[in-house]
Length: 217
Ligand SMILES: Cc1cc2nc3c(=O)[nH]c(=O)nc-3n(C[C@H](O)[C@H](O)[C@H](O)COP(=O)(O)O)c2cc1C
Image (tube, rainbow, N blue to C red; front, side, top):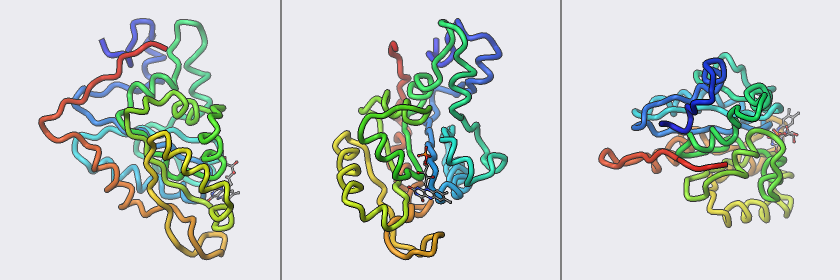
């Protein structure tokens, strides 16, 4: 039996989980944080869905929701509120564990300075950072930094990016651009096409089987 559909789930919880998909699907969780580049979330998800055999869910921080219209995102978007609405009693599923089991790949696009710092130091105080903290590091985790140039140039940024790389996470580097705040320089999120191309590299070749994630928490 799939670990994403435990016998303890009633139908209400199962529909809130919304994590059923066929075993042959490559499952991607897109994490989105409070950078202005979160505006590109609908485009990123739409382009990912064009890849055959891919299934996508979004996990958002509360601040990220200021930058996109959830109605324009064509897949389920999980929030911190969902974590606590699904977990009411001891036998209920824990959403961040269900999502880390479900996903074959996690991409955080954009990754803002705040969540970068939290991940680098192991803080897990919301749904997204709990997934990252519980992540199976044998699975790909891609991150796309996006921040103001002054933030990017601060010496702590390079240290924190290096820490994430040390965990085996893959940086999709930010680019040079005129930013929304008017500053010009490095710090803009990579182009959506670059992010999609990076994810494509992890798709299984046709003969490869995608293994389900079975573990205990
Ligand atoms: C209009 C606006 C744009 C912002 N853009 C960015 C950004 O591009 N990168 C960044 O690191 N922080 C940016 N911030 C700051 C983050 O939103 C802030 O640090 C927030 O606490 C991040 O929370 P989160 O990491 O939980 O999403 C911006 C804030 C505002 C108000």
